[in-house]
Length: 165
Ligand code: HEC
Image (cartoon, rainbow, N blue to C red; front, side, top):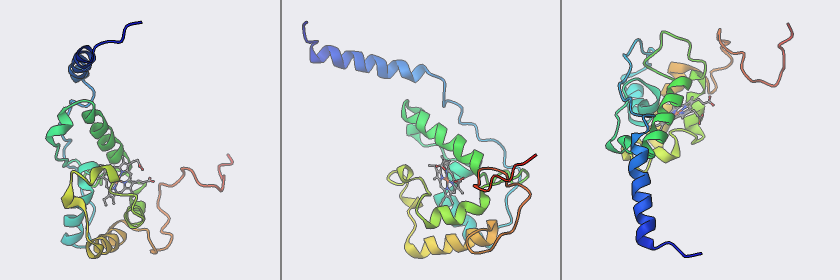
């Protein structure tokens, strides 16, 4: 078996790279309208949230240039769709069952998604800013020491298995 020449391999890769640009997944960067926002405890909480979270958790996403280039575009698009599904501060007119987890996700470092940070330095919060946003999220969205509020949503996961009907 003959080894393919490097130039040939590169040519094939380049052709593939171009071909995947034709996959329409992730092309739609039209932001849905903002329907309603939560009642922020302070403007500062909203400001920090919009720096660190809103690209994936609102309808006011700023789509970067690289979000137009496959395969990065697929990842970005998927994160934003999924992020909005879990928590969308632009659609406060519908139930947001994960909202009360926001403070905790930030506190433990799970959010913002680590992959987001290298290209979004503005989303890197100082320890003081992080503490401010954690407190603001807890005050605005509940959770984190606020005690069980018992929302109308619940009903997912849980280890109690109280689903007995
Ligand atoms: C780059 C996109 C992105 C950014 C920025 C981001 N998130 Fe997320 N977030 C996601 C995705 C994707 C999910 C769903 C998958 C997961 O849980 O990892 C998610 C899930 C969540 C959830 C639900 C967690 C659960 O277990 O149900 C909360 C709450 C959340 N994010 C809060 C935040 C907060 C607060 C910030 C800012 C400090 C933030 N996110 C920044 C993409 C993002």
